[in-house]
Amino acid sequence: MTYGKFYTPQRSELKEILELPADHPPVPSAFLDKGCPFSAETAKGGRHEYRAPQEGDVRSVCPALNAMANHGYIPRDGKNLTFKVIFRGLKACYGLSTPLAIVLTTGGFLLIKRSPIGLPFGLNRIISVKNPDGSTSVPGVIDLKLIGKHGGVEHDASLVHEDCPEGSLYPSVRVREDWVDNVIGDILPKVEGYDRSSFAPQHEANENIGSHSRDSSYSTAVDTDSSESGSTLSTSSTWKRYACHSYHDTLVSCADVGRMRARRQRDIAPKKLDAIHEEIARGEMAIILGVWERETYVENLDGEKNGGVAARKKGIPLPYLLTWLGEERLPEGWRPDHVQSLTGVVKRSKLIRKAANLVEMKA
Image (cartoon, rainbow, N blue to C red; front, top):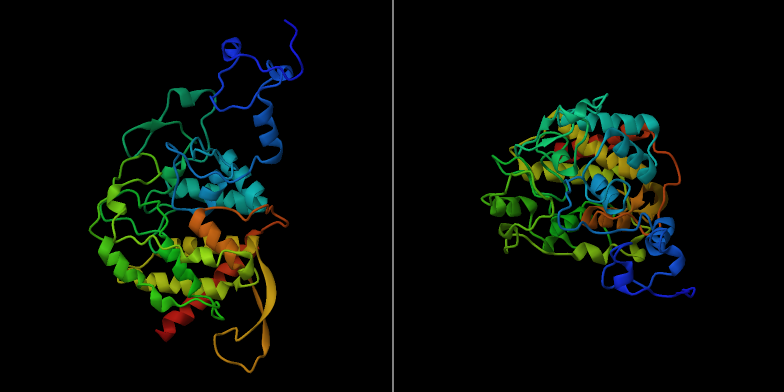
């Protein structure tokens, strides 16, 4: 038989060549022995499009890494992560400098007590590492679930995740959307139309959820625990009203993030983060502030009336931050346009700490 240019073979004819899903588009005959043209086209133009995690995928409580997986900068299932995979993903996704990407990747491995270096000469075939659930994995290979293990990279007082329950290995990876709402209230000058008084304080929500137990097994991070779907967990998504172009010029600064950090520390009192995890909590936000930073002029920068005098404010667009925290998604069509340096992160982290300390002194 002579096939026409766009002859669509019968499914029985393709059985020996490839298996197609029922809703797959017709395949031009020229591609029958060369792979799927539709997936190839996707790889060219939309390789880093957003896709939410699927059943069986794993995630951590880190929005930066989860967004990388959701956009395909690291494996979308969140598994089989090596030093090289994470290092390259950080540079490609966020434009991090080589020194900064090395520090973050190496530190991440060491904090969860894993070697960033795989074994040579095929030794990884005979030597394995035990995981918290009793399973084993190859040395030098981790996944996002392991990165989220409590007390390593993960820390209490997250901006949008609940603390790890006592006795559990992992906190919930579910984003508290009502807590995403709360970060808006820490921004000065006040965001137009936002009223924090309509939301319950986070420490009250913490008390409500404190008795909820969680599965500490080393399993999928797509959280479907029925205990988390009750009325004690708000499904508010008020933040989505502010994640639009109308608020693109509303910037979130280091001082704003400092207020967020101070608020979350108060919420978990009398618990307190140790120095290492305080630095991690500041640093992760300092990085994203540098990635998307721009500046504008605003009135009443410190929240007080100043006679209409405009002051310069550096920060990132509010919609960017909200979408990143709430959906672990990057801005539509955005790509890195500069290199984010280690020194820049250190500088912003100090500014965040200074702002947080000022809030605590006034409390």
